[in-house]
Amino acid sequence: MLKPIRAALTAAMLTVATFALAAEIRGDHPDTYVVKKGDTLWDIAGRFLEKPWLWPEIWQANPQVQNPHLIYPGDVLSLAYLDRVTLEEGPRELEPVTGVPLAEIEPFLKNLRVVDAFEHLPHVVALEEGRIRGSLGQVAYVEGLEGAQPGQRYQVVRPIQRYTRLDRTACCDIFHKDDLDFRGKRTVDFQQFWTNATVSDNGHELLGFELMQQNVGTVTRGEVGGIEATTLLLDDSGREVRVGDRLIPVEAQPYDLQFFPHPPKQQFEYGRARVLAVSDMLTTGGNRDVVALSVGARDGVDNGTVFSSWSVGESVVDRVENGPWDRSEDTFGRSSKVRLPDEFAGHMMVFRTFDKVSYALVMDTVRPVRVGHELKHPDAPY
Image (tube, rainbow, N blue to C red; front, top):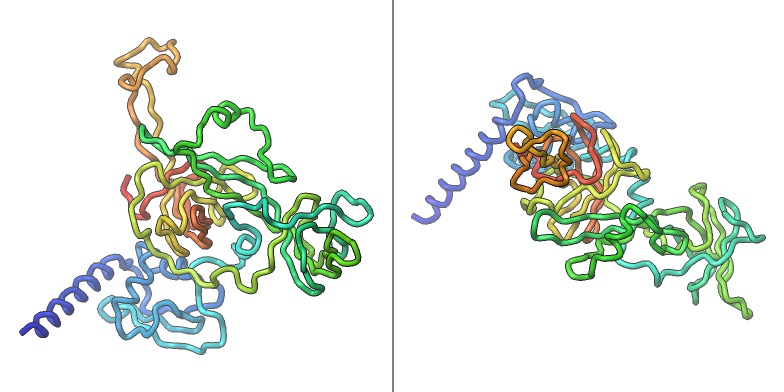
């Protein structure tokens, strides 16, 4: 009797799951859709699903689809039969469809990374002919590459940001980023000077240092004949190199090429997951901008995780109950203030994950995404 019961329960669960997912299908969906080159899972799902991040689940609820994570240009998606998605395979001549537009994030996949420390990395000590900057076809001299052999390739990276978190139990965590100088040392930020000076290490956590790729080079001469620096020929048309830049070995494939949208694995405590930064040193971003997030692999975040971004509601003085109108808000206590609701800004999908920090692409917005925004489940109602 046990096996029939198990079979019945499994069938019932699959039926419920399929019904629940079918309920998310738009009523005006087409009968068929042919996947095209340049499509993304997010854009295709947006044509006939209410929630693009449910893409993998609705395919997995249909066992006739051999692999829901491998959809190719030329595949025909049929939606006509009982609102169930079936797949007619097309030619396998092109790369499979991914969750985000790769062309828009590829520079960030190659150029940005977060590390716990960088002081131990080899660094540029000088450039040929005493130059201040070096570029394609020029030579940089590096200290710390003992044993390097001609032909070995290295990325030249620059520490540009230091991300930290102050753990607070009273309300919310405080996140901060510091700009770094050519040595990787923090620059003086007068807006945060007293905070940086007075905060102790108790509850103060380093999330990591952001490194940006400047160039790529090939070793042409090691430390031989009494020479104490390795010669590196810059062979990429990227950014200029300067003294103090660091070196890391070139990775053959340092990132994933496919991203499948899905909700986060857990709900974070309020104030724990925030937008740390917007690409290009901005504080505000919109569709197709890249943002850094304060959560990473240790928090269960992986590539494809979808978050909604919310501006944190202010606490305003109830002037009707507490007046007078000319009194400064700073003189009122918490009991005199009213917490306003958070406001939804948009959705974003993670495309590169490190231990404590991740990068995401803003997929859709109704208002700008800003540094400090709260990250929630994509279906969060408030």
